[in-house]
Length: 94
View 1 (tube, rainbow, N blue to C red):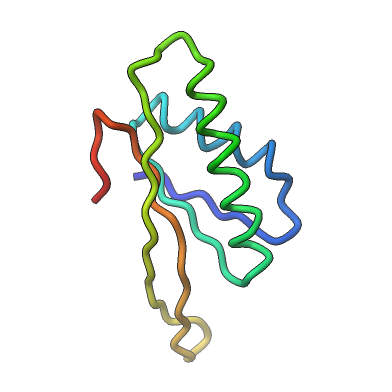
View 2 (view 1 turned 45 degrees about the vertical axis):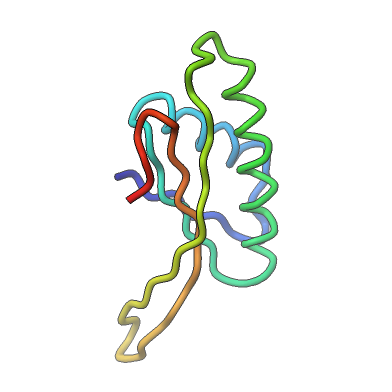
């Protein structure tokens, strides 16, 4: 599964294009966002991606998103984050 990272300074339109492209190619994408600003940009990007996929020639793809969380080790510190997994109706979320 392809993992995309969205920051608070990410352009939602650019992130949406990447999300839509990965969904059309692989059927599922995991999006990581750490912090309120990044989560805000991610939600905007998912909404825009939904509209991009809806306008595409393949109308059988529908964007489905769900929240998730993870933890990881960073420089001897345990960090936690949240994100969205987005998939299509033909490839369910993990």
